Length: 282
Length: 224
Image (cartoon, rainbow over all chains, first blue to last red; front, side, top):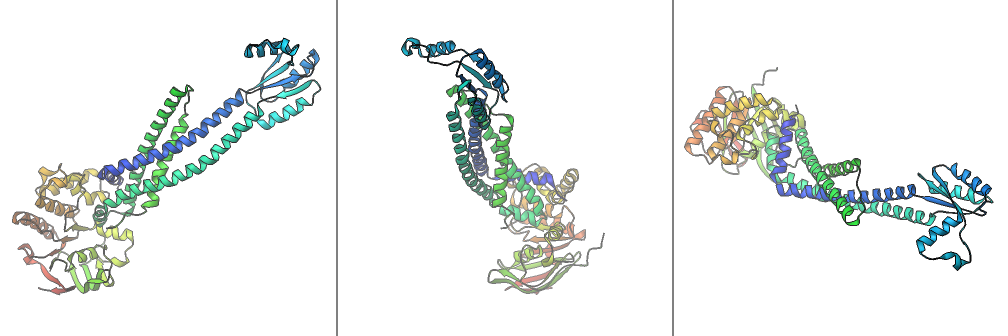
């Protein structure tokens, strides 16, 4: 018969027996989970930044000839584009006014007239680069269209950056996880080995390896749970500090915190399993 | 439920030791149900090794060790655990869960066996009363004197009314009053029918009634 209450009490007793090692294990778990969470959070923020960029994306279709027919044709084409949320005609005069307002210069005399073409502005709710490229190519094939302007280079640069970050963070995260497993496992093992005499006398009284296994599980899960809570708290503080100092509010969804907490739990559980498979005999 | 065997411990030509050093060489003896046996020997004679051998914690290089009807060397871990739960053990140096109360420590064998908390508490209360430790129930073992710790160990060993009690120098370092109290507890268990094997390096009055053996140079010599 498995005496779970006894195993739980032994597990907590194990943690209380060497508080310094418990604090070390919890601290290491929290640190590792926070760093891994931070890396994951950075990737998550970059992705949301990309999504935000896609949402705010506008495409300008410059008209070769600003005629009613050309305008109507291009606007009707653009309205049928997948993901297009808002289509607006901007006359050449308005473009000139917008640019002059931005630069503060009187540009018409400088160029000897209005150098800007009229265009149709298309705003997307969500867009994908491949789709946009094919739409742009199709639009540019129309005789009414001079060219299609959208921030393709910025987009691809952002994509490349995100990919590089994800790739390098994968390596760094893996290394940190391995290092953390070693260090957490070492402190958990030291705590268990410290009570070898106790394990032996309990075994001689008939305590089974199964109960001792539950005891170890309680030790690992408690360390993981506490470390996870600390990591979530640290990440929330970091996010608050980031919002405060960089004036860009960021927040992580609930599932992100749960993921960080579960990561800490998994780190402590796996570290314990790797380093202490059985209760050491004296 | 099957009747326990009349021979509770049986050793035949047992050889055991540590590394290259043989501590027990060709030890043979048996203990019957309800028998009181004392094994005397100087420090380092192998008394603790003998106890550990009987509990399956010490490997046997040759010979056979049967305890409570089973061959200890052939026991599966589960069978070994089950066997240990039927034995009361008194360790040479008292072993307790220091962070648990005296009450919890006394009831440990019952908790290990998965007995309900209420039954554990009731029987631990009774056992502590018998051991004269009622007033210390809420204390922690390190707060007890050496004599009290010895009595707590014996109370714990007897709480599940085992058929066999193995006591490794239970009277060592005890003053005469504490020795008498410890002896009384063991005598009660013996009177109830438990077989008791005690190792000691000096005989006491209680042990005058016992079948006596002496461990000398790894060999067991019958004295009575």
